[in-house]
Image 1 (tube, rainbow, N blue to C red):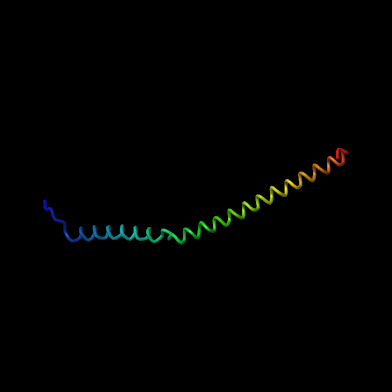
Image 2 (cartoon, helix red, strand yellow):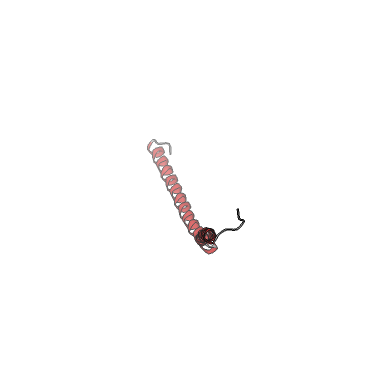
Length: 80
């Protein structure tokens, strides 16, 4: 039994190593850059601000409606 490998085995091993490196390179290329991450975070922050503003306006609207309804009912019943 020889401690050496023949050329075909070496070529197969070399091809597998090349395939693994190519897969790693593709994964590295797919990682977003820091500027892409910052852009995504800024867009997410804008959406969160819009949602918070909408929620605040909804709460204010409901509060005004409930207070107006309460005042109308108390006036109708003659308590005010």
